[in-house]
Image 1: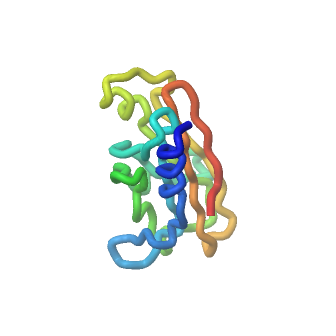
Image 2 (image 1 turned 120 degrees about the vertical axis):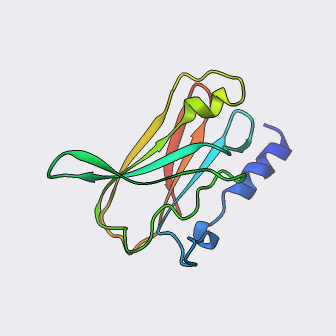
Length: 139
């Protein structure tokens, strides 16, 4: 990987504490999509955030949005909405690659995770190419 691509990726993996919701308070849950095939942010990708209702075993849509030019989707959830629960981030990877005239093995990626302490900040990163993806909890 070229030095330029490494620097570009490094500049995008920074603390999300500067990302705020429309109300001005930081979102307790942030995400960042990086296109590892091209070494650029995953911009203009549709994302949906769901919360699981354990009593009915169904998912409730909380919000949806599109990643910005930096591959981020600020303001996913407010602190008041953020409760101890199981959440799911749904990324429309197939549409993302199709918008660039390419196909993808994965039509979408879903990341399911548990939030035990809504007082903490959580960052869920998605590294994606046409034929693979990886995720991790960042800081």
